[in-house]
Amino acid sequence: MFFIGGVGQGSKLFQYPKLLACKFCGSQAGCQIVMTYYYFSFFFIPLFKWGKRFFVKMQCCDAVYELASEVGKAIARGEGTDIRGEDLKLVQDGKQRFTISSQPAQLGEREEELPKTRRCPVCKYESPGEFRYCPNCGQRLR
Image 1 (cartoon, one colour):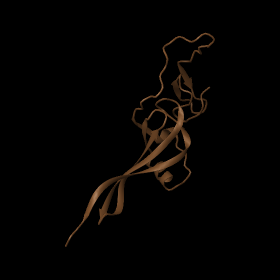
Image 2: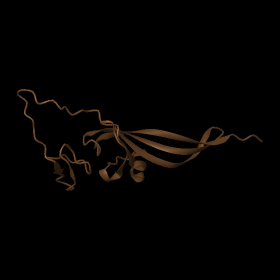
Image 3: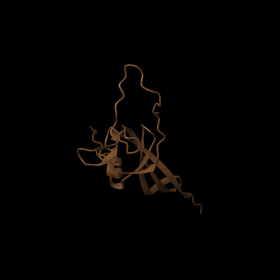
Image 4: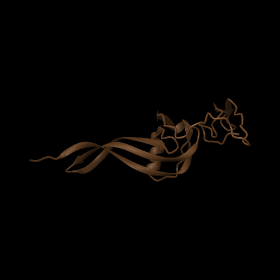
């Protein structure tokens, strides 16, 4: 008797059409959702999967978050589910693509003084002053 079977690791990419507020850099950007899993195959045919985990990779700064399992499964089924701040857990810091200039403002430019912290009008979360969106719920900060 000849037996060909094995265990492997796979991944699947899902599209998420909405913008998310990045907790790491504070900007609002698009993202990619990736599901990773293990599978058992018999004669090169995958029979079942286990250990599914969902990750969100932000396009603004490349930060990676682990997505809550129930939200990830709903997205995999094609349901129009919203991702909230509490559904994300930071796994890998992003490499910020922007730089803050240390040069003085040019003639005619006004330099705005940013507050040290801002409080979200919706969830009352306190975030650093340079954030434009709440890292907890995604609401635009004033």
